[in-house]
Length: 378
Image 1 (cartoon, rainbow, N blue to C red):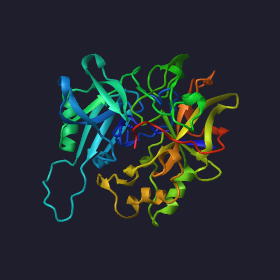
Image 2 (tube, rainbow, N blue to C red):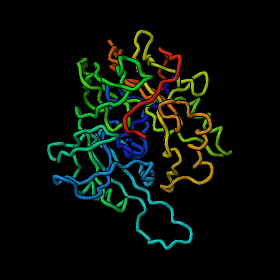
Image 3 (tube, rainbow, N blue to C red):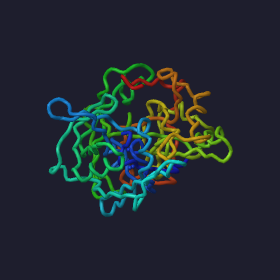
Image 4 (cartoon, rainbow, N blue to C red):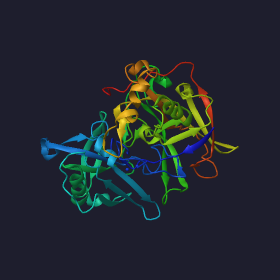
């Protein structure tokens, strides 16, 4: 198999950039990037929250914004300029509803430019939570939050997760949960993990790494740093839809897309993959659990609503035969969550850089499908 795509999700509008993170706001495609223990550089470091009301101790009550519940997030796209260390978010107003009175605006597009790594010294620290996993994040400035609020029509807060700040992996997602048994509910999630540092912007060379005992950490990715899917499985979804409708890989929000699997959904049984930048080096990603799917697959990005016709039936089509995880037996699964192995003694001559076209092999296969468990995650 070969790597086909390595999209990065900078802003997690569910929690990610392939246009900023898709629930997250939609992805940014890259031709190469760098493997780290918390995902690709800049991946899902920003997230939006709706301000519900004033909370205790002067901190507002925040509701995490995900595309499942805020379909308008599909109206935002993003572009990244790594040479300048900045990214641009563009909001495109939805087309008018037929027969509705529409207020004419001078411009139905609005853009906002942000730094990939904000100066946290000028920002306020705030406690946030995603799927019950807490983090210390930084509240972006008033002008930025006002811009997002004007696009949505209610008060919104954009937060940034600085380098070194992470969320804890819960349940049995971390590679060492339940002594490596990812088929049962998890207890301890402590394990060795890579602490990676890198200089400049992607692509870059990892300057050094070391393994230390710590809780496995993730950014604003849902449950793991990496989400692996295959083009063969995407093609299978296309085959289930009405003629002329093609499955959009963006909606599945992977950051590693592989091509060349022997069959669709064979990844259900993968326990690990090895990326081979050259024949003498392998970078291993441990695949621990399935990705449970929801209505985010049915969003129409042109209208910011749930799709009509075939585009709005993806989840239903997968319900037919993809409810194969006993841990979430009422929801379909698609793709595998992954973690960079702490046993990678060498990240190869490219310093951990992975590129489209790199060879990939399955280095471990499970006899049975794994069973997903993350406490409280429905």
